[in-house]
Length: 500
Image (cartoon, rainbow, N blue to C red; front, side, top):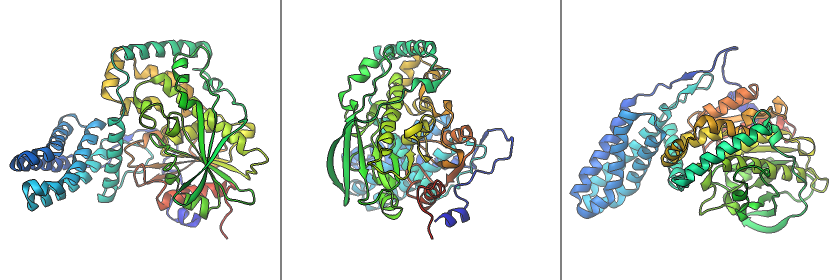
């Protein structure tokens, strides 16, 4: 696998000349592709009218969304929400073309299915072209396959935004603005803006676990729970509101371990909106990491996710505009995981080595850990996959437009949130893990975490090994290239033995 990775040019630095300044390089995409979803939307509207009441019911969503987003793309291209709306319109068109046969006939259904499918691919193609490619990052090799995968990212991101409740509107926006100003004053007085590491306290050892067994796809998993013990600093704004979220005060983790002799461990940290006790392990391919590579696996649940959620959906508050909660989320995430790392290092756990692999929001947590772990919490390698390393940018780029407008009216600016979130920014901490034992994996056509974020972490980490995968957000760790790169890092870090 390692030899295969080397032959394919994986886990290498991108081709960047020494001293070359960063700068955007636009991929060679042709904007006239937008004519295809516009035509598809028009035909949906036409056949909807011809199909009577049933046709209108079925055709209004794909027709209106494809037409409106296509026109918006022409006049206001570059807004991520437009491309998400276009992709969702095409996706709905693919689904609704089947019942549309009943309203407008077989010919209409077949034509709409073909055109909606083609528009789905075109929307992914157009979406990638909206984001400049940083210098040193390979250009996306756009084709039908990669465009389709990028469109799948767009649908996922649309679902995340659509299911984010607009919490920060009206008087709440003014309250958020006051909290940010108060927090900046408190953080400045305590020196946390100049020295973000001092914001993070060293957590105590875990004293005891709740323990139960669960089965998932044939795996015997241990579900651990323990009192998190994390509390914001006494004078931090939003402290009482954060502590009032009772489910979040209990930390949870899944364990998949081999019986018998001690083994190395890999801590696998999930992304935004994940954290299901039944689905969280799936992203990390346990049949590969656990069965083939022989690792024990630990899956911690991030704050406000899974059994710790504060609403109907896992992680739904993180893009709502509650900026102080973003700080507390990052701080509690690394607090809880550091406690678990200390537990793994106890003699009775027999951890031969410990690595950390985080994806998306989990990549953010892994990168933040890299700047904080010390002593008995130490890790042997850190792999950040598609990492979101700028939580302020994540909100301003992907948060609800209603929330951003209300916050701006309340005096909240991205400059203020950038400053506040330095306390939990991996880009504000120097990495403690050796350069040869840290790595970044990123997808060049990622529509959830654009390549600029992992690229900025790569530069901050002094250009360690990196894989630029010609794929999308969710396909990275499942791909042969992603597996090869992870295995390469684990072997070079002496966590996994080399194949003979």
